[in-house]
Length: 609
Image 1 (cartoon, one colour):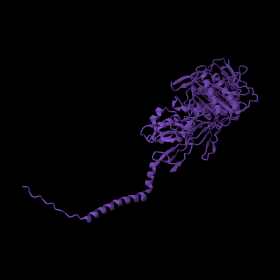
Image 2 (cartoon, rainbow, N blue to C red):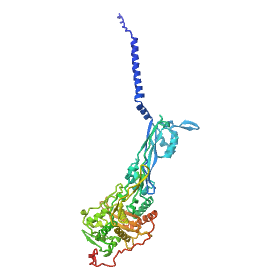
Image 3 (cartoon, rainbow, N blue to C red):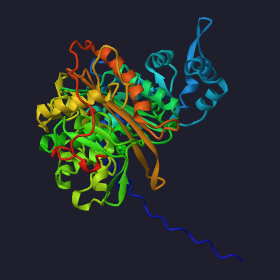
């Protein structure tokens, strides 16, 4: 038999207690909601609103346009042009609608591809890949012009945006590339004036925040916060772009004609020290900097060379200023001159010559220069090289500028003590050489070379650069004497006639030097040069031409002098410098015969036959 079923014990339910519990729980829940509501709407209202706004905002960087670089006449050498980067939110493009047969129809990705491809210059298949997918951000085109972006924006394609950017443009291309410099793809300065005055040119980026709808479209009535960019400031150079263009091309043609490796050409104002042209070869296109190979430096500032005979003007000016020689002093020049551990010679063999001191410079005699230069102590001559600016930077503050190399007198070797007198055994830059001639052309006053004419101030007004330092190096009388000797150098009796310009008096000096090759660690090839001042009766410009390692000929009078003539002729016309109207005073270069051996003024008297 089954046991009797156990009867359950029933506990009476307290309905009032249950209601009270439910009520308490309800009050707690609503209190939590109320507290959260108070926090959101009261205490944290600003923060919550800001967070919501951030979710609807899109921030865009407004890049500052880099300042212009212009020449002395306002011709643009470098400028920044606004461009756009076109991006896409792929999830929004399928919503694209446009009118088809008068009816607003969803055309999606296919319609966007048809409308965008011609504007972006892309194939439809390529663009379709870029617009299809789930990516919220993707770049589809760079360097899009502002007018093109306006046409794209007018289409109203959802998810198609743009970001402002800037492209650096160099209208003169290769003409002044290594002088003006370049910028990298990210806008940072790479060299030249771009790097030299980067703080002035670069500007400060701005920003813009736009409130957008859920599909990414800007809400016209939404909140917009714009902090405008501050563009870079303009820089005005002393360069004359017409002379720069001509010098660059004349230099390139001249170097190619003789199979040269590299070279420089400068035009400097004789009175102000302003650099009107600084050409460097080989050049490159800064608009395509990514494909450039080789050095990007301007060789006039960075490359050091042994100047050769152009440096004889310093030895002569020093000797005249020190009073150890006079322009008409007799100098006997033998075919060989034993000094230290060498037998020195001139550029070619010759019988014993009977010259004046002025004739030594005019005919560019190494031996005659030694006979004059050795009348000064080595420390004295070294001091004169440094007074003319050798062995120190010019003060232009150009990137990678070299100070050159002048060995201290007490460290010179026996032969170097003599070779420096005619420009071997020391190294200078093209700008230093030009500055030495500018000193003579300016009556003995060296004016620090300048490249910057003015810089735009914060108020938009161009502020002239500080006046360059002026230093009296030699007396005006000495400078005039050297000028007269240099006129003789370009005469029919001098070292070259190929620099002569009809109607103008020219004072100049050739140079031919052994070329030291750092890569080979030895001398290899020649350096040919010519530096001239014109008009000689009232010098206005100094033109320097240097050609490195020519393979056809190598004398400065044959290679560099014709290039000088081309550049100087153009510069005279461009600057409106009138022809010479004063005849040159004749200067005695050679003696009528051997001077008397017992004449105490004669240098090299022991070599009189």
